[in-house]
Image (tube, one colour):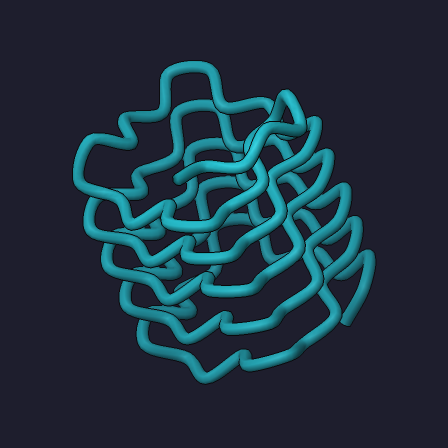
Length: 108
């Protein structure tokens, strides 16, 4: 499913464990409570996407566009966020334990 166009798609609660969504357009998609554990999203566009309560543990989100995405309550434990654009993203209620942050540092 790499490079697929899911602009505005409703994927709420979908099981996308380990799926390759590299380069996919998920702009404004609803991925609330979706299971994306171990998914590969390298270079994907998630601008304005709803990822509220989504499981992104161990997902690869390197070089992803996440501007304005809703990550409230999302699980990003062990995720790779290297070089990801997170402008305007509130991470205050997000589990980032062990994640690789956009600057390459490891979150405690």
